[in-house]
Amino acid sequence: MGAFLPGKQKKITLLAVLLLLLTGLSGCGGNRPAPAPEASGGIRVTDDQGKTVVLKAPARRIISLYSAHTENLFSLGLDQEVIGVSTTETYPPAALGKPAFDYRADPERVLAAQPDLVLIRPFIRQSHPDFVKTLENAKIPVVALYPEKFAEFDEYIQKLAILTGREPQAQAQLTAFHQRLDAIAARTAQAPVKKRVYFETTATEYRTVTADSLPALLLQQAGGINVAADATPLKGGSSIAAYGTERLLLKGADIDVYLAQKGPMNPGITPVAVKARPGFDKIKAVREGQVFLIDEKLVSTPTFRLADGAEELAKLLYPELVK
Image (cartoon, rainbow, N blue to C red; front, top):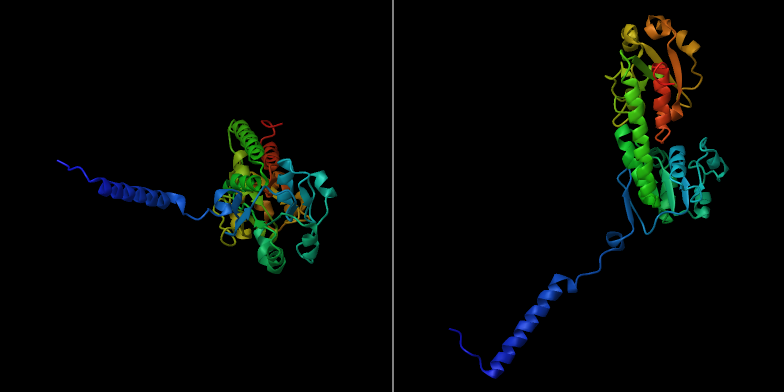
């Protein structure tokens, strides 16, 4: 049985217990340092080159140095927040009225605009590191994004949304985007025989696309079979593959449709020019007049207009199903 403690000893014991309790409470967080601002709030995004950028609030003065970023920002309702664009803008029309900036020029003009975010592609940081470094040294956040693969598109859009505080708008846009692609796939699934397609990205080495690229996945959604699915990328992570004349002509009898993208990557392309190439008369699609062009911006540029590209491809392959 326990004994009663004398009054003085009891007071000392109670004091010791109180001290222990206070020490324990302080050890549970009372004396911990305050969390860093980025841990307790703000915005944190890691870009496609592994660089983590922290913003205190959603960006409100944005300079976009890649046309796809610009188009997507406008799609998210950021017309006013975009204060500058690249020199290669074509869409939307409203973007053409914004001040144009060039990463190949002096960065002082960008600094003078006082942006709170500059969006680039990884290519820009690789090819013009001094330009990017100057901005970063001036404490301007620079984020490099570019989805090489179709599977990366949603994450890319979500990162743009996080940086700009447009997550609900992005989710709504992505939901509608995928619903539209699914609807296109459902229509072309009704085709009794699937068309076998070769997709040319550029006449140089008759390059095509890798199986996980944006155009290849759109072609799949449109109900086409990629005859060059065995193509390997030019380099790690690239969506472009060199196929070559020999391999292409060996599959000539299996090609129902010959598609070539038109745009900066493949300038001057026409169905007549494809037909005139030496040996191309061995390609079934060429002999039967099934050579078509598709706008590069609709199939190779990561924007919501990829759904337009998929529908255009479906119309070319199955005009009787998609009108």
